[in-house]
Length: 291
Image 1: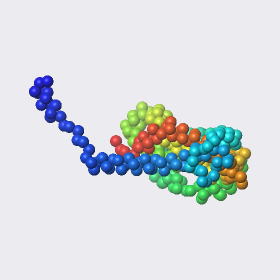
Image 2: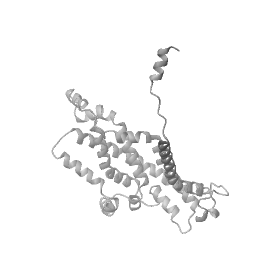
Image 3: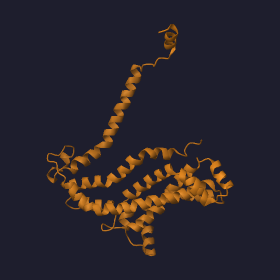
Image 4: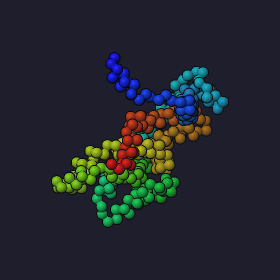
């Protein structure tokens, strides 16, 4: 090796080894993260082990113990009770998420790119809709559906979740479209494109991250809803939250079936987050930072 190479190698900055205080801080952070992870996973652990226990082992003093006799009887009972409502919940959550996301996309595009008198007031009213709790509208909503003549069941719940999801979807898309360069819209207008063609040809192809965020949000909201469901449906035509309450709310509760039912009800939303979760944060951040 030449002297020049040796000199060049000696000039290269060496990586500084972490000191004892830095190593201690990193270890403490790691231990805290593990503790928080265990706290989050403890309920899931109890659900999992209890769902495989026979009825004789489902007691409070044995909640943390593994089953002595593993059985899938609770899962079979839960599946027989929940499978019809599981399909109805897909019929509710999928169209509610897709339609509210599309309406929010159109609203967000109009409010972010087309300035018209009263646009800010209209957007404020959309935001106001986000802060109305479910409890404040269930009784007027129930009276309205009776007055209009809407039957209890999934179609009415789809309509309610679409309307109630429009404000948050509009907010997400308005912020997202604010980051789209104005030059793209102006170029389309120069080429003679109107509002609909500009949205369909320019904006909609760029809206993937926004749609991922709103669809995950709306799908989870509609899937886990219980309050609207209990007012606007029943155990014969309601979503899985109503059936799960019926499964767990009897005088003689089958705890293994209830725990298995809770896991069955949570699996679809878990799959959605696992499959689309990596796009969720990116979609939320899109539009939050000006380029």
